[in-house]
Length: 250
Image 1 (cartoon, rainbow, N blue to C red):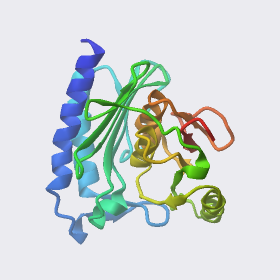
Image 2: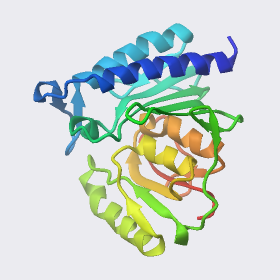
Image 3: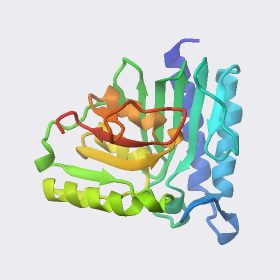
């Protein structure tokens, strides 16, 4: 099957799973806590992940599936691997704050190969295939050409890792003094896509898991941006790491 057919099938599946989110009853009975401060999972995270796993593996039956709501995660160094966050921005979802997304990355031999991020509330589908550019609802997107001094900075507070909280806000304050303003949305996947679409000039978070950035980071790069760790290294799909995404001018 051609890769553009894969993308069409993946986006169809993701869009259908978006309906699960839109029709959800976010009552308190659907919420569980995981390890870490303010780290929640809902029955809908599990429901969307189960649906994604079943349907994505029909496209690539031999692929590995790495979903956030699994207790153990398979290695992704060889072959194809779906790296999935069923609801990125779970706290937003619980609060009915419409900044949540389904994030599906497809890796090939440990390298990011395809990315899909979908905000069902806005019906915005961000997509990218390695070497083929980035798109929003089928239209090409590109990072901003503005310098940071005329830009907006997005950031995540690493809320599950208390040892990183203060440093996160100190970095945000430093960027605030250098940019027009800062924003905190609660979804790393959507923040990365905002950089890709030229809506912001920089995004950072000091610890993210691969399912948070596998799709969005590729979309940034295919839109002409740059993504590294805070130390300037390459991202790893095998472990949590820091992430800084820019339009390449910072």
